[in-house]
Length: 276
Image 1 (cartoon, rainbow, N blue to C red):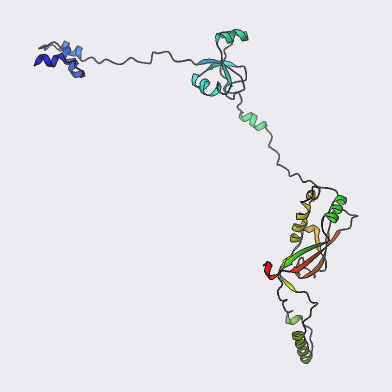
Image 2 (cartoon, rainbow, N blue to C red; image 1 turned 45 degrees about the horizontal axis):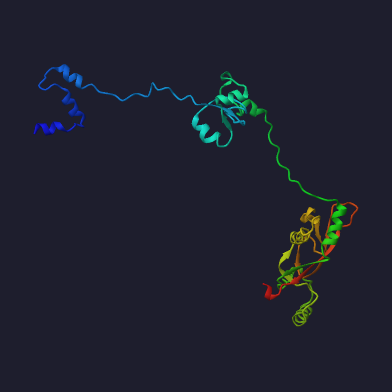
């Protein structure tokens, strides 16, 4: 029974220690020797990898200029620089081809490509970008507006009943005359009176239509016009936009002192019910 137990190789560390002790020994020295811990081999004395010698094929910030020769980690060279052709390995044959020796191996330049605070103060502030506006002469502008813009610009608006004038603005007449005028107005409306429209036609609307025509021409798209260049004639005092159906003359100033404004016609037409 005992032989079968001893025939198997013990794998437990405690069993190995008991087998190493003499049977029946009570001496403390034997037990002390058997309890000595065996440590694994240490890596602290192993020489550290110093890297690989390389030569830069391009300027790399924080490392150095092109053609610099120094030691670098193998992983950086293998995974980053060599695949992207930023550096080459310096073998003994390569040293001989370039006529260099081990004494030409330098150190990494950590300050290369780094802007210091003093250098940063010397860098001027970037100038604000200025918009480049392509313009042309007033004479050319006058010619383009005359030829590219049609004589009549049509706008469509929904007509609405014209509001009645305020009571205080009506002429002071006798009640009989006023009653006769009201009956005549109900039976025979004034067809010459302009019909009001829903909304209005402003210089901005007119300018948008003009620019839509100019953008189709290579030279016309270079013209710079503002709503201030559009003036609607025939409006009442203080009015700046059209609020009724009809034809209205407009002037387009071109900036030239000796040039007359370009004259065109704006016609406001009723919007058909099917177009709403």
